[in-house]
Image 1 (cartoon, rainbow, N blue to C red):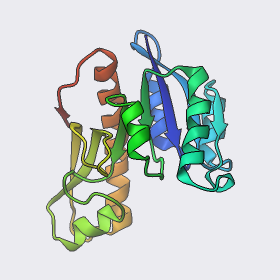
Image 2 (tube, rainbow, N blue to C red):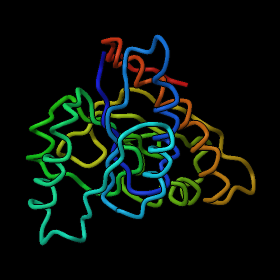
Image 3 (cartoon, helix red, strand yellow):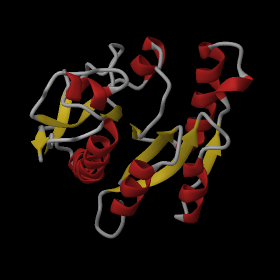
Image 4 (cartoon, helix red, strand yellow):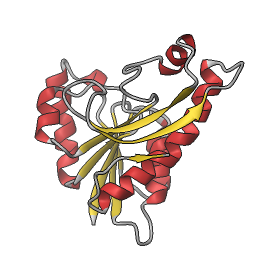
Amino acid sequence: MMRVAILISGSGSNMVRLIESMTGAHPARPVLVLSDRPGAGGLARAAALGVRAEAVDRAAFADRAAFEAALEAALAPAAPDLIALAGFMRILSAGFVARHAGRIVNIHPSLLPAYPGLATHARALAAGDAWAGCTVHEVTADLDAGPILGQGRVPVMPGDTAESLGARVLAMEHRLYPAVLRRLAEGERGRIDL
């Protein structure tokens, strides 16, 4: 059984979908939800779903090294096989990523390699793209550049705003991330496309 820790910064909608998917015969189980913000709404949602939820407040640490040491200390008792970033809005250091090489995944709201970083929906609209979507990828030291494990595409509609496009992409994220997680838990790393 794969043990999964989920890192969040906000409301945790992708986290909820991941937790809800890991039931019954699913080969993975959530063992911890960890946030860098004590007030993150996702913490209460995780606890309501019966998953241990904790915060390591980034604001309480002088630098990233100290914060990541505290993250490691919080993760250690859960002994996760996989760390799933689900709206975790911190860039992890190369050292942290190296210590967990091949065991950290992230979901990003664009069809990578297009639009790494922030404001992905506005950038897709400004470019006149016909399609947008989301990508689950392995986390490496390079921002949003790790091997792609899955992508989900949605059409850009006439009159779309960043908000309306973002809502459709988020609905696709809720389908894609659980699908990729299940494949990883089954020992499959091949790419899937929705």
